[in-house]
Image: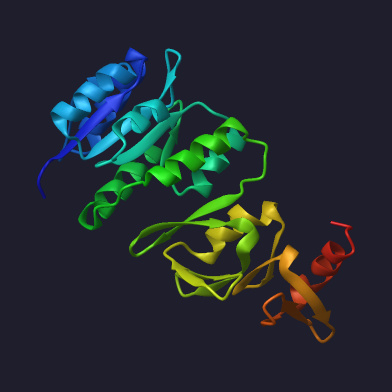
Length: 254
């Protein structure tokens, strides 16, 4: 494998030094000596170096990493954000399927993030500008319910309005999205990952294979576990183990 050209953009010298040292120690195929300390110098280095990966700080001397990416317009490298934001803002990264490192940088998390980039290199993984704009909006209002979610597919990413998701169905290590209007998409993430993301958005794990949008439930039929009828008339079996919790949701008790 040819060397990976990495660029670290951060206005804190100590942060740049720590990242460079860790990359050098754990990823010998990465050329990590390239650094920049602002949006302006970052843009210069990107145009000069044409990096494969950019480790990008979000807040830099009154500017942001989003400002840099908007100026570029076209993103021809993998982006891994570095941030000191709290747990609410971190959810925005997860909703938009964008890699991030929480400061102070932990070795294991850096290794995991960079390995993702290396694994995706063969498929030319890139974040889209639509993903990044949605992430920027969500981070400005971190407590507001996210309106869209980025769904990774074999071709890239699809931004889907959460209100249009009727349910998600497990398909091995993938997840099938069933949307209003009859559209379906297959995501490369597991149902467990979407359960973690969407349950706070009024979704419910009705069965080990199904995650349903409570806003799209049309009726409930009694039975051993019961059957949930969705807005598109699809019927989903309700696990006996989840029945009591589901009924509390319907009654507004949970």
